[in-house]
Length: 443
Image (tube, rainbow, N blue to C red; front, side, top):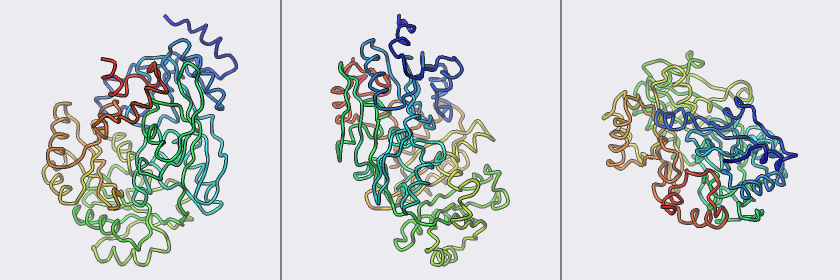
């Protein structure tokens, strides 16, 4: 039995949260998007929360946890969807949001602490003509460390692919959970040892990230009478090398009807394309819209788009959030369709049971349709049948209904990440229960 009064005394000088309601709040993320995870994770809580203001604070927490063999789960803003920051075995949740210093921003490169919010960073970077390469729909609240630790793609992935692609993360500093915790710097390909690892094998305390040239992004909605025409339009603009764009998202009817704030720009019968296009590319963009028979119903200049809610907050997994606020029986899938033929196959096979939402991203140098489909949930058995049908027909499913790192996306044990964990977290104290490779090693 852990003596938490003793632990609190050893953590003297740090900001500690013990209030039950606050501990509960800081022990959760948006896992409830999945009815499967909701049943598995609803009662999981930390014993206490520690907020770290700097790297020395992190080292102190690591030393106390190793000395007393206490599980440690790291969190940012908690905007993830898979239970990444939920402590399965109690212990301490380490909140890194106070570590929000931007150490430097220079052309093409920045060095930041993990608690820096994405939107706050972009505002500063734009002052010298640069911006984040990609960001999720939780842009206004998510942290850079959380995005690297648990994210994968976002607005900008049409140009720069996935976070795990070589070059999208240059370097990190991590604190280890060895008998004598220390700070390690990982550079180049070494960062893959902790990239998208849910904080299971190191506590990220500093990140060096590449930037993209900042463009004035116009935001637009284009509507189509037919979903497949909308999807083909999405592929056409994704493939249009001369058009500068940041985001291409396609919604099959009736998904846009869940966007009540945009009801004046959509209709229940029409499918929609939501886009961010550089203002300098608008003239050829209009020609492409005309070619595909679309109708522009919404347009904001870059200056206008700085005010109010960005269209991106209706895409990616904000689509799921908004739809579930109206119909809580909805959940979602994450899919690599690879091509439009497979999109059409699934669209015709499942009908309204699986409403298709596409996000175009770059994979291996090619623009492909990925899916964040809305699914009318009935039973876990039916959910698994739908996943199986997709996989048997060549679509890749990054399963959002599991909190196990390897079972969600890659479906294989990452031996590099596992070997690194064995070295820097030999007692398995970091975010325990999330890495299948470690769990099987213990059997």
